[in-house]
Image (tube, rainbow, N blue to C red):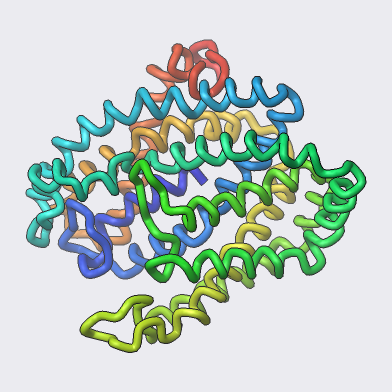
Length: 375
């Protein structure tokens, strides 16, 4: 899921300008790049938060509440506080620079004046906002544990038994309904984007739903086996629901009135129903596929898993500048996008291998310092 963040941001430079704001826009824009962006956005952060909830519950069980908070502060809080100001200074110069080479006129949003305006607060944490959200959810989960402990043990046991029994038999319907209700409160046809210090409750609640699902899944991890057999069918169902969702989005009206479509919200409800279906079907399907096909130790995948955190933290300057080098290359936009993804991954892996993995930075991100040359 971390690696998909790089892929998604690499694609934005090749999306037609009408869809997304981004400082650099290549002359070979491609609708396929647009579909890559919107497809990944449907599932990759929901799945990430579900996995985060799973391992949060693991840490609480093995280390206790205090150990859990110390671990999360060390692995999430410290990297966030160190990386954010360094990246903010870097992006302050890179964003206007990249906009100068754009095939479309630079948007006012990428001028230095706009980058220092009050509106910039909504983008304050840039692509690191999900770490900020995750820290909030960890604190909330810790605060809720004493309240949950006051519930009689028999009631808690029955609730967990009900979760385990229903997670594959109707439980997904409840999850879809909950996600649909939260999505309906969004200001757009998708999960609202906000990277500032005061995230909207609806956004935190949606990610908290997936985080809580992962937490409960750890407590009843015997049910993981049930994800394997229907994985392909669920993934196919998620992809189909994604295209139905996009169909309603394309023919409908925005959630709020505007000059082009005064009938606000027309098609909004069915679109979000299929969006919620797509989210959960793909989450179930992807969990099942990884349990089914990647359940054995692999040094190479272990290495990539360790590197993915560093890759995500530093990737945006790479995927914003590398497309400029390919600006004059007569290749289709989708090919350029793939080249940028490969080049950015390769370059960042070099920095990880030689300057991170065996240093104090690697210890902070991965929990240990690997000997140089170790896989």
